[in-house]
Image 1 (cartoon, rainbow, N blue to C red):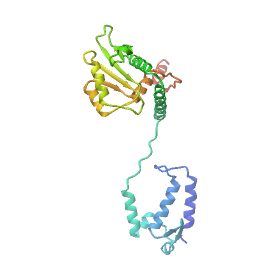
Image 2 (image 1 turned 90 degrees about the vertical axis):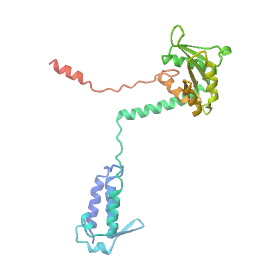
Image 3 (image 1 turned 30 degrees about the vertical axis):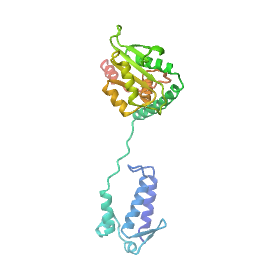
Image 4 (image 1 turned 90 degrees about the horizontal axis):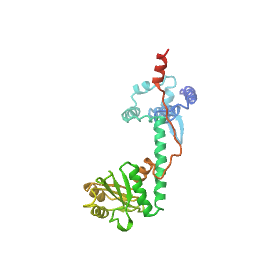
Length: 268
């Protein structure tokens, strides 16, 4: 008989270590058993059929031998040699990246903010245009660009709000705020109208919307030095500068204060 008893005891040994995995996440004992079976089959010492393995005549002839990988390769079996060469040439799987607790926390934080952004945009879609204009002015103020005011709806001339960067009003930012559906794409004509409203009055322009901008609109705005904020960016800024949101819970990540231990030892 082929060394089936040895194979059986090896299987038991690997089963005892069943929780150990390979770099690609496979159970190590199972990977070794599969490798042994494949190697023996490529060598012609066993054959498989319907998930069952049977020893061949060639395998029975080696029943008294100590069968190792080196021994099998020295026999010069073409199928086995080709199989081993292909395995060695195959790229090695990269070990799974071990994430630090800080990295996991950052991922969770991003997911929470993404969900919050979606909720903010949904709530904004239910508000009035006047509310959105006031919110936009408040956000730009909170970002530190100066004091702002919403222009009168009857006489805004295409400018919904103005931010005054200095007390005398030399440095001003004109704002247009459009509360549109999230799937709307704002094209170049809308930005051209806004630029026309600014011309000769205000040098800086900010176009804010809950919708999206087309590529041509972005290119035109960049050429005319107009800043565009779409719905996604608007929600991010609202979260960053605490507009329409409040802090629910704070988690402190602490580290060892090495200076404390140095100072304590120096005092002894």
